[in-house]
Length: 105
Image (cartoon, rainbow, N blue to C red; front, side, top):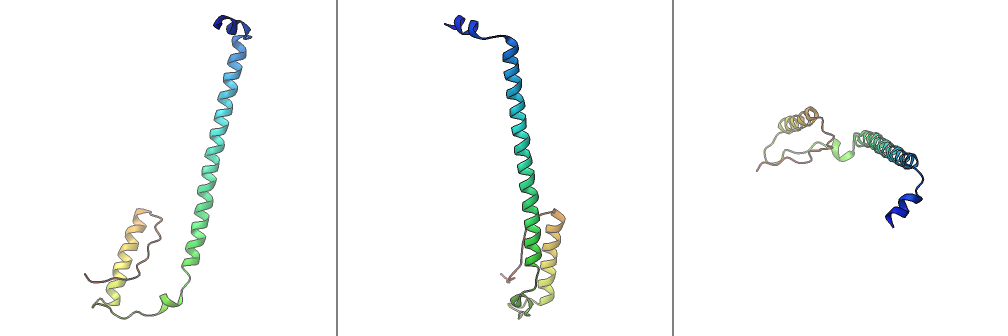
């Protein structure tokens, strides 16, 4: 039975052509997938920057001066927030970290 299948096939050249077509189609598919992943990364980066610009607008709750809680002055709070922001900026992180409350433990 195997011999009859081999005899029915045309030639080795035809098989090589099919293999080559398969390789080409596979690589084109991989290139298309890479392009879509790259495009998704660019779009998400643009959306993140637009979102961060909108979040930087002052809100009423953020503009109010908070009272000193647990004996921590505003200068110390600002120093802690600046240190955390500098740390994340140095790491190159895209973290949207916000300090809302600092409590003494």
